Image 1 (spheres, rainbow, N blue to C red):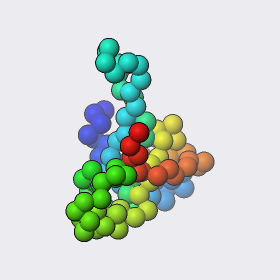
Image 2 (cartoon, rainbow, N blue to C red):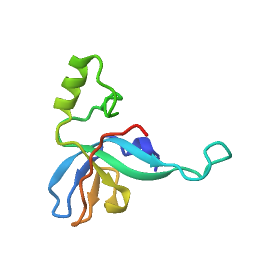
Image 3 (cartoon, rainbow, N blue to C red):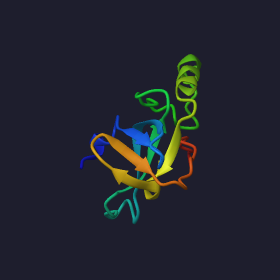
Image 4 (cartoon, rainbow, N blue to C red):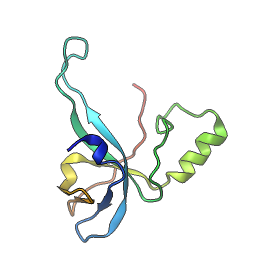
Length: 112
């Protein structure tokens, strides 16, 4: 499966209740990034209950301009969360299911 195939797929909880749609895939890179890092691994899925569109980069904590666009995208993506890949119990072409004890994390990317 290609990562792009996860985008737009519906996410359900273990009782088959729809939680939203995958709008982004977060990756983790380990090793020395300057000297040949390890291949990236899937860290989690960003799930939006309201929209199928992306944050357009406005999920970064320091991006606030233009203010009107930032405010509109924050409002449009309210309720969006990050589900860890370890909480995914099943993946098909039409749906992704998370474990009963999954946890919702903030989708905001913080600058180091």
